[in-house]
Image (cartoon, rainbow, N blue to C red):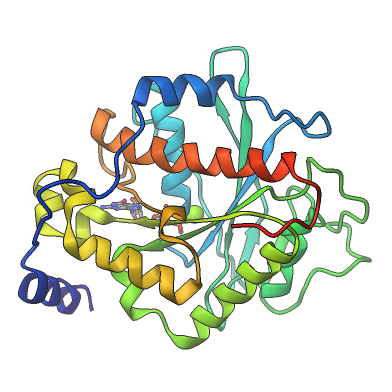
Length: 290
Ligand SMILES: Nc1nc2c(ncn2[C@@H]2O[C@H](COP(=O)(O)OP(=O)(O)O)[C@@H](O)[C@H]2O)c(=O)[nH]1
Ligand SMILES: [Mg+2]
């Protein structure tokens, strides 16, 4: 499958580039400083909760690791593993924090959910419960049944801190053209549920290095690649999400060190995630979101 996609890219796009990037990056140092010092203005919340959802292998854990790497100044490769046991797939709802200095953590946290697969993966309704803050930390999702109010993993009285403040869809950029109708329908349903709850949404398209030879050769070309821009526009149409809420990212996967170029793409996405969260926390509830 990958080889078919790659040969399509090479034949059709030839790794064509724009002469100038179509998106400009905010300065790394300033963005990092702002994110480290960020505190939600809304006093009812101590942190912004970011929920990443997407297919297995999309790069959700990789993105959390990458943010951690940017903040620690080295590729941390923190072990974030999903567990598959026996015949029934279970996935734990876990919260990940990012350290900003030896004593404290950033005012944003991550959860991730494998949510698009049809025969396994977290049920659409469970994702909606997570959005509303009804899923307790440590709950193991079951593919065969939904979380119900009588379960110990059900939080019947969620605080503002338990709720999700930004929903992030994570998809490998090469998969955008291959998403089945069923998966797109599911993604849209989750997105609509988030909109109804006033939760803003962002998408992160990962593995840009694997999708375009000119980007693999030079990571500075991410926002110059015509193929990658086309995938962003396609994904925007599929999901009904504005292009300015869709980000291209190369996660730290095999690197030992971080570098300014990869950091810039990760920080650009995080900057928008936190800005949208802050805006929505500042607005009255049920205001339409991005
Ligand atoms: N080349 C490359 N590999 C990536 C990228 N993001 C993730 N990976 C790799 O893809 C695999 C699946 O990523 P993972 O983060 O575990 O996916 P998850 O199931 O969504 O949490 C791992 O082997 C990662 O190292 C990326 O941007 N580029
Ligand atoms: Mg994972």
